[in-house]
Amino acid sequence: MKLPPVLVERVVPTDSAEKAERDRSFLIFAGIVLVAIALGFKSELLSPGQVWALALGMVVIAAPALLGYLRGTEEFPRIEHYIPVALGAITLAGLSLFPDVQLWKYIGLSVLFGAGFVIAGRLDYLRLRDQEKRGHIVLQELILVVVVFGAFLVVVTLHFNPILQLLWIFTISFLASYRSFRVNGAVIAPRRAFIFALFVGQVVTFLAWAITALQLYLIVYEGTFAVMLLFAWYINRGLVRHTVEDSFTRNVVLEYGAFAIVLIYLFVASYQPSR
Image (cartoon, rainbow, N blue to C red; front, top):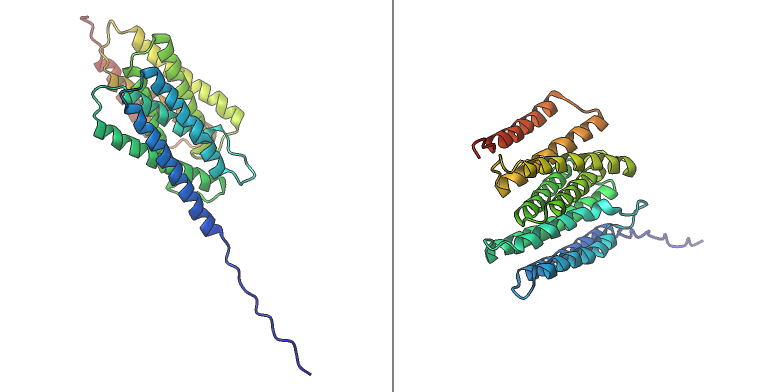
């Protein structure tokens, strides 16, 4: 009696690696498109109003690209994933209006923005799929700090209307804090993250108002102003996060204490009583 031939089971390779590679290619392509749009900010044919409108268009284009890349998990991609590109668009649009920013420097900053967009999107992709590694939080934090500082520098340098300037500072602080509470480190629920981000935004805005109101007694250059706002945001956001996580240690206290000392020093060093 002949037995039927044994069927050899064929192992079908999963397409996860190919899918991941395809996803990265798509994200890189989107980053190149955003860099090309950013380079258009430097055109002499555009007025400042048109530059800001084009920056908004950049965010509108980046949002569906990120959505198409990040979706596929049970948790639908929320607004915090689009914040870095929005802050980056503000930074590049403002820097393009700086007369002392040479073209080659602006091209380098635009390429850096595109690389940051790809890296942040990729890290968010891995986080949503519980594949985040230890060093990813540091990269996310670095990208967020860079775009926050750039956005602060643009807002304080372009000399908007004082009320509009404070509104911009609050918006930047709020968005960056909300992103940090939702993505960097332990995830905080959306409502709590919203409230905590409001608190941080209020503190940073109050500092900006105090510096603006004391212009008769303070000599604060734009770069120093942006650094002070960055330190205020970083300290208050960190204090809120460590309070929520109950993770205060001696090293944490020393770190934020050192930043607070530098912030106080910058404020005192800018004081000119003879004015």
